[in-house]
Length: 443
Image 1 (tube, rainbow, N blue to C red):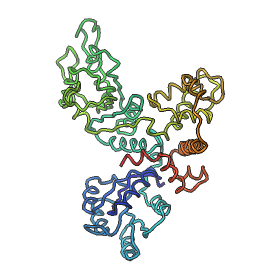
Image 2 (spheres, rainbow, N blue to C red):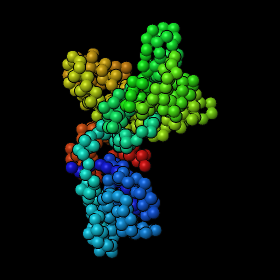
Image 3 (cartoon, helix red, strand yellow):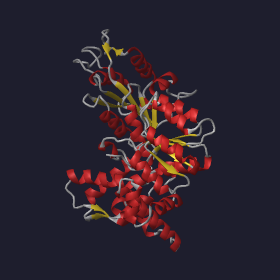
Image 4 (cartoon, rainbow, N blue to C red):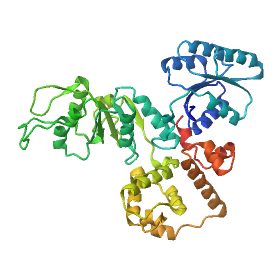
């Protein structure tokens, strides 16, 4: 099966065409790496073997031609190449096809034609990778792809983002897609455990190690085995314990409190924080520990910057809630969806779930209404400002596009069919309403 989105290398020296292709391909859900010179592409293709599912390559380049790039890269990788050629380059393009290139397209071309060629040229992958595991927005699809790449390594991972953006969910996803999935996932909230108890909880203690230690206690580091030790809110860890965590990671072993016997540490460390912990002067976080923990960093965007995920998450949360709770609620009304799309969500996905849980518990309606989800906004709903017809039409159109993207897991072609417009028209409207802003900021 071919996947609808993948990691694409784009070799195009024209800045206007290159930027246009990057924006459109990213909007389609692809992760794009753009090069303007053949040597640059060859260097990165050789160091990232297997990381690309397709290379889209212009034939005429400032430092070499696309055929040279293709032939040299074939020695390192089997990544498929799709060539863009002018009319004068067709003979060369045909020769490249015979040499193993998967396709070529003649300039100038319609974007829809290129997208069809890309869809049929992408490297085959398992169907499971098509799923929107963490969200349907380009930002969260990209986060899932990065975490899958991180899963193959043993280096520490640092997940940063506002409170409620789903940092622990991402850590559990990393665990799930890694070779450690059958091993323990031990989560420690460094902000929830009193500082004087955190060391004992993390490293364990022997019987009699201190007053009240009546029996042997194995800490999280030991119970994690060869799985994952997840340290949430690492920015709240006391400085004294930060030094011991650094020692643990450098030495690969630790001691229970009250014992001199070293215990090997085999787990992978994954940390999360909503704070800035770069470790510069005046910071409460050690700079050397920050550098050690941030070997593989990832930052999650807030929910207000990825509106495509709001309704998608809301439906998933509501399905989970109604499975375990006696409630008359079976869905969310269009008015409530509109209200959710307009809300800034300062508490991010955690706030969204909490509001839905409260609404499902208290509402007597079959479909949740705005007042069920936002009882604190009763006055605001009653005194909403009057919009012009143009503003109301634009707002309604934007909400309908977001609904369609949510219903189709972010697939633009399917969303366009559902809305009864062409893919180009939908893309233009998404650009106009700022729905493509997240995708553009990722490049």
